[in-house]
Length: 254
Ligand code: IPE
Ligand code: IPE
Ligand code: MG
Image (cartoon, rainbow, N blue to C red; front, side, top):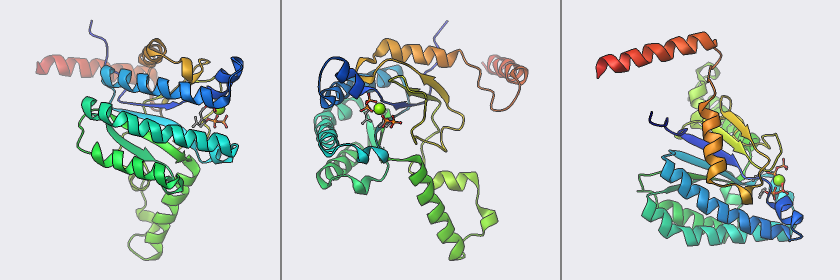
């Protein structure tokens, strides 16, 4: 039997770099450096598996509160990652996008980010979506501000506000919602990640630290996902009946 297609949108909270380094008596920044290597591998793995969108939580709005050496070390790693990856992204048809308060990034990082986004804009393969200076609450807040401004200026009425309209005002406008959300590093929380968009994501927590996360872990998370029944509020029987009907429909149209 052919294996089922991978989830269309995988979102990953890449956690555990610091503890991974500490366990080996290394500085936290060396954990982040090892984490970048994992990013390179996992991006290629996802692209080979046929994932449509891969969102990586790389830096949160709360992460600005870390020691300033760690923040600047992370920004340097980000800048170098973007510079070194451009060629590979073009070769593999990966289109870069970013979500978050991008204007708060250091100028050099912001510029190389925008440059990479525009140079890969024509790519037709996987979308690599980096969450940088990203916070789900601030994303929702700016959407509320934009929508309420439209109400005040009279272009829409409050009762015209729809879920689709909220979607359009988020940083993720135009992207599908995550199907599978993975968090490495042993914590079981969302840490302000994709709060609106993950309302029906399947969540997979693993103790594996991000630097150790590999293809086997990824395919393990994907097969766990395939073993779940996505019910969206309905009963298991309804979903199973629908799947049978869909199978019959597909067979009869072949
Ligand atoms: C995740 O690893 C990377 C970022 C948040 C930038 P951490 O740095 O949070 O690693 P731990 O949680 O301290 O192990
Ligand atoms: C979440 O990890 C943010 C990223 C992975 C970028 P954190 O390590 O910052 O999360 P908390 O603070 O432990 O919740
Ligand atoms: Mg952490």
